[in-house]
Image (cartoon, rainbow, N blue to C red; front, side, top):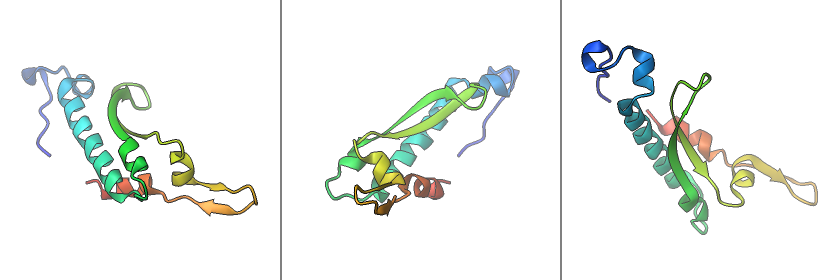
Amino acid sequence: MHDVKVGAKYGYQGLGKWLTGPECRRLVSRKASEAAMVYQALVAKRTGRLARSAKHSTVIGGAKGDRWVGRVTVDAPYAASHEFGYTSEQGVRRDGFDELRNTLKHLD
């Protein structure tokens, strides 16, 4: 990571402007891309469909919608049941794998 320069002499009128600016978006996008790659490395790969379906993006978000936020989306049809678990038709509970949570633990 590098030093972030905020202030009028660097073209920003304050931290709020920087958080919605292009430099912040680049940094957040880079970290979201790293998170997607970590997820792809951690996830089970019987067919590879879950890993291939992981995508990263940046959106304006946060609690107040005032900053760039990185997002990792996994859209394979069974992604939610794989991550969070499910209950079978026989009533047997299958735990999820928590790979998205583990992904966060690997980011610095």
